[in-house]
Length: 362
Image 1 (spheres, rainbow, N blue to C red):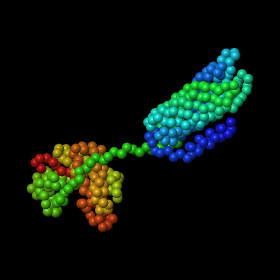
Image 2 (image 1 turned 135 degrees about the vertical axis):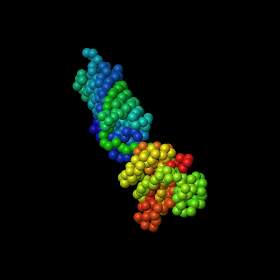
Image 3 (image 1 turned 60 degrees about the vertical axis):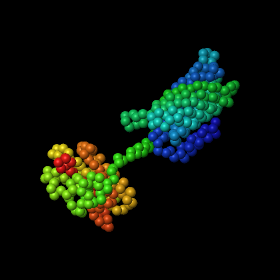
Image 4 (image 1 turned 90 degrees about the horizontal axis):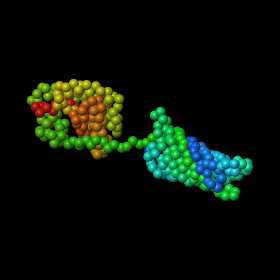
């Protein structure tokens, strides 16, 4: 009996210590389970059905496999004045094969073995017996008080007890119980959401207007142009009043997340943009993303896209309609300063925000 219990304990401890569960949506923390229910006695026992309890510790080690180890007890009352009563107390080790990777439902098939001390309550005779069992069950996990994970479980087992005199017994056991996982929940990676595509801009003459919208190609460098790429010398004063360029939003090296300073710049720009929208219903906001020269052209193009999107998404959260905002990316092609110094490169890791009135007359 002691040898059997020793083997069971060592096997369970070794499995739990050596396993390295992967990060999954389903519950993989160690747990304690308490359950109780009915034991339907083998007719050969000559006893009534009885009660049964389990106190178990366990853990799921992956998509399919788990282990449980713990104590159990069963009490069969004598059937009438001539029947026999039995009390069983022992331990078991079970392997669980899980049938789902749902984070809430964990149905499984179980099989295992154990050992117990059995007492005939009529005569007081005791024996030490082994048993094997098999069955199935399910655990339903939920949240208690929004902070504590608790599971409710139901189980069925067929238990075949061996080495009894004069014969073996086969009992059917049904239990209900609770499961308490302990330890910190393992983090589940958030689903990867592909970024919104941003148009790759080609602007041959560098006037800020893409070639496909530029009605005046080959504008001399430094010439101020309108939204059509043409010089603005004759542009109406109202249209020029709608054009604003805000403080550049700067980014750390190889990052597209907004810093606290960047958010402050956009917070200051938002009320000005909203005021312009009231005056110019066709106002649009142009956001352009840029990088310094480090990295490949393709990587910098993608990074500038992410920077432009970060600014656009923040402005949308602040209440500016997404339909008013265009996000363009230029990679490293439009430096605002030299790329030969740290200070210059810091100025090039930027997003620019401008407003323009897109009314037909302008």
